[in-house]
Image: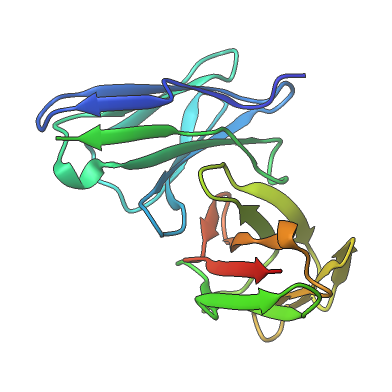
Length: 111
Length: 108
């Protein structure tokens, strides 16, 4: 049984560009949450998707948007990249409010 | 609102004990504990759902005091494999918010 998979693992972009990160949840999970983790910090909640809708959102600007597909996979889009967007982006899946299973993350570097 | 963890960092010798605390300014319905090793994704340790509940996993246990809006993680007779950063997570609505983490280093 595959766990949570994220792609790509690493990404380098320049300021102003746009990026799309992808996540496939653990089999049987219906909820996908996205987190941003800066070096040495805890994961910061971006948003959560359930039944193809954004159910909850953290304190992130509208430049951060997402989508969930009928097969529960999800995408995170970030527009107009800033240097401060450089971080590890983690996707976590769960069944309802159960424990979170994290993917290995996408390391985004903005130059 | 993010939970607050203390201490920020702990250094132990093998066999020593440690306590990591997590507190919230909001009413808690559950507390999760995760461990993240360097360069890896966070891994679930345990979830506490009821006030006053205690749980254990090997020599790692936790308590949850709903009234005080606090949880503590207890690591006894620490092993080298316990090294990593420990995060508590609290869910007020449907989302999980994490503390800044406690970096635990266990030395031989």
